[in-house]
Structure formats: C-alpha cells, structure tokens
Figure (cartoon, helix red, strand yellow):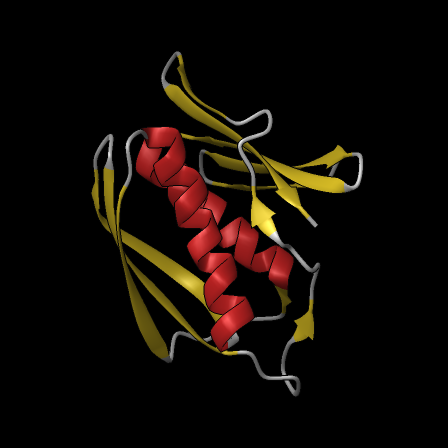
Length: 144
C-alpha cells in the first residue's frame, strides 16, 4: 500500500471495495487532522499547490468523530464547489467538539494541476480516532 512519511507523521492509503481509505499516524491529534486534510487534498489534485489564497473553517460538532469527518468533507466541498485546492493547513483551535482552521491554497489550474481521484465524501464507516501509546491514529473511508 502506498504511504508517505513526514517526520513522525505517516499517511497510508487503504484499499477498500469501491471506496478508498486513509490511515494516519502522528504525534498529536492536531498533526493527524492536518495530515488527513493534506492527504485528502493530494487525492483530489496532483501537482504542487501554491498558497495564494485562504479559506477559514470553523466547526462545532457533537463529538470528535463528527468534527473529523466534517472537517475533511469541508475540504472536499471547497474543491468541488470552488475548485479550491488546499496546500497548507493551519489549525489554531482543536477541541473535542470544535475546530478553527486556516486553509491555504489556490484555484485548481488545469495548466499546472492534474485532476486526482473524484472523492465524494468522508464517511463514518470504520472510522476511528485513537491514541495508541504516544501516537495518534486516525482511519477514515471515503466514497469515491
């Protein structure tokens, strides 16, 4: 299975029937959220994404799992609705039920980017967010 390792963070693409998943390992929960967001963006867009503009996201959800799924779905929505490709994620607040993040990126450019996989949504199927020892692990399955 393909994966990328950045410092202590590890991103692994999971095979799943008619869907796709990500398994993220990071030192902190914030790093796991950031790595997940960037992994989703790299599924949607191939090529370097410049940090030319920004979008702010503020979410309040009933639990951490809903927060995680909705955060990823916001990134998918921004790409689908506005063709906004994310190149950097800065989370300024992450609680059990709320999140504030700045997304830096640019409008999708067919001259510089190649379309990636058509990701429809992050799902709750087989979703997990856990702390194992000193590391955080997240697993999410996407409808593609």
